Image 1 (cartoon, one colour):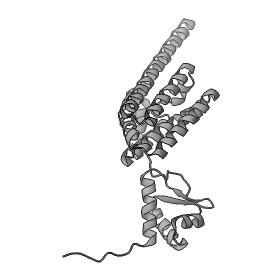
Image 2 (cartoon, rainbow, N blue to C red; image 1 turned 90 degrees about the vertical axis):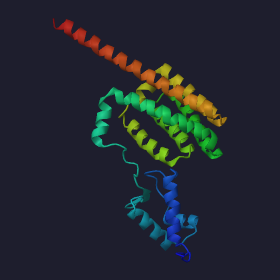
Image 3 (tube, rainbow, N blue to C red; image 1 turned 120 degrees about the horizontal axis):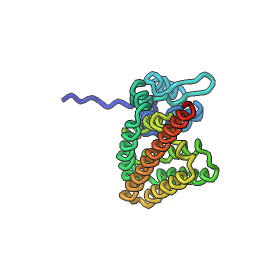
Image 4 (cartoon, rainbow, N blue to C red; image 1 turned 180 degrees about the vertical axis):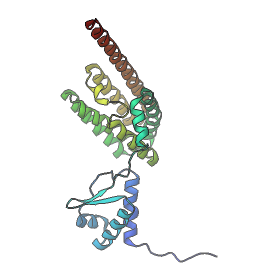
Length: 255
């Protein structure tokens, strides 16, 4: 029989496995700095030489990177899900915007449903904490901060769904959203009525999650993204009408 004796695992291999899982599960994020060597070796319960061996292995795999004088960081393992030429094509066509919203509606609805049943108490506390930051930011009327918290809220839900493929895929998609490839979310937060509606929609999503009501959580996400789609449609129509009116005005002036 082709059985072999089980060999004890090297300490450095155990460290590699643990850090890999933390990256895979999204607990260690791209750009995040690892603790200093002495602290990390103490927390892992391994010698510093074993830790250095593990770090070197993870660097060879492209999962960690070192910055002179700054320390060891999680590498930017996300990248983009799409080629640069396709990203440029997305940004130039409205069809991609609405397909993106439809994709988010399906994926995030599923993520919210999963999170309501699979999230740990800590996961729900993280979502609650982000929502409380959204509430605190609302009176300050800073569209940049509100847009960032909006993204953080949705990604916290995806993290709480405990599906690593969905997590990394959606993180990549959200990076494109932050860069304004699909639409500039800050435009929405500059509108007074829209800002209030968005906050209440996020409140409904959070309340359903905290109650662990899977169906209500999914429906709240769907309603939210339906609203986003309608708001963007109305915004694009208004800007098109303004452009047409401006052209007519200029035409009249030049007659």
